[in-house]
Length: 398
Image 1 (cartoon, rainbow, N blue to C red):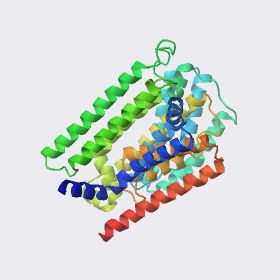
Image 2 (cartoon, one colour):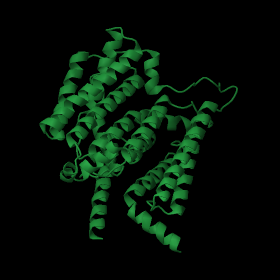
Image 3 (cartoon, helix red, strand yellow):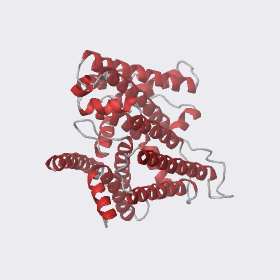
Image 4 (cartoon, rainbow, N blue to C red):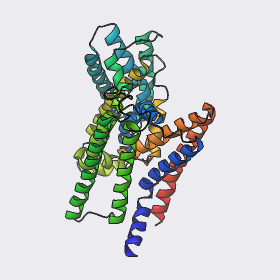
């Protein structure tokens, strides 16, 4: 009985983080029923990952910006500008595809440094700086392209946005299983379980563990089922095409940035800066440097998202990246980030992005008009922020 009470109390204290996972599961089950099982087919799951990959990449950087108490409205325009520049480097300047990718990431870092300078060292609010950046880089995109599209791109470049790991390694005539995908799934499962076990052992050793064992085991079992289910859909289920390359990129980014935000000094400084700026400055944190590097990082991730999007479409156009910033911001807030800063996680932002992606895909499979889709997505965002406000008031009253 005591264990049950501890688990219930813990779940109540973590309602914000746990609620988004429950919401994702409910939405997936709902659309699986409403679409007569079409949502969780191998091909459609691959489509969800590939079609939402650039939003998930942006959401990782955006949640860090929001945790620090800022906002970035320019990421869609930056993604479009970098995609246009990569096209110019390849088709007009004759650069190899890999040089164009590296050059594009450097351009993204320079863009982030430009905006970070105005925010961190000049003191202009990020809302104004990035609003100006949205206009500046959208205009530069149109200037670079001259209101035309650049296409096609090299095959290697396009693989980043829509390619699969060894898609023809096992033809369907000989075996339906993509054993490379299965191997990657098993390795990912071993890594995740090992990381969770090591983390809990370390917290128990130092007397910092407040998570009930029953909930820890439940969470670990759910994670294992999720990884194994995804592995089955991508590698063994009929119609599977292997592991999308961009999924591996996303996995690496999630591991790196989750570790940075949870275990590094820089991550703790970001939370401190967003939680209480004055207290962070008094404690010796160089908040200007934190802000500057946050925007440099956001510029690099926006560049990567632009490369993924351009590679998937095999085209760089002046309208690319439209409303990407709103989707990334929505993913962060739906994933549990607080409007006032200081709260949020990378995993939460990824979950929020997946909620948006499943909503889009499920409604499209049902044939719902895009006007209604926008309305429903707006309501989901509003309810997510309202839940955050309610949770704060409830905690404050307690």
